[in-house]
Length: 181
Image (cartoon, rainbow, N blue to C red; front, top):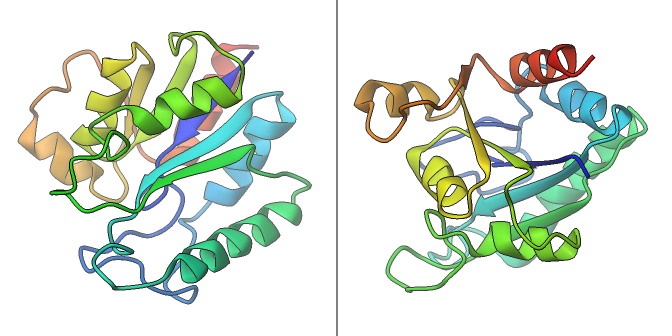
């Protein structure tokens, strides 16, 4: 089974240090919707694992989060594609949950949904060190994109040894699909 787990903000849509708080602020990055559709059409299952502490902080509601994901679903529908599942962590950094990245709870939940006993065949695409750390915790393959917080993550340079870097989600998908031809 071919599975890719995507971080959301900074990988699929624009990111903001002030949080994505509304459907209007959920703006797909150029080429990201088409890239997801290409993955789906190539036989990959695509999941999203996203920290959404803005809910705990009171910046937006669970209903608003679902509306953002409905917008994503409608955009993907134009390409005859859909996300296989979305895991999100609504907790804040001090809540000590098991799901907030860099912890790997969301990745483990996705593996369970997919019927996998481990995550070694999963590819994780993110824009931050915590995405990479969570992937490494469960032995998933991690890939970093330069979009979102990716450039900042690269500048810090910590914990990225051996992790491939791509310009954006489209670049990752094109290289993945070209290498598997």
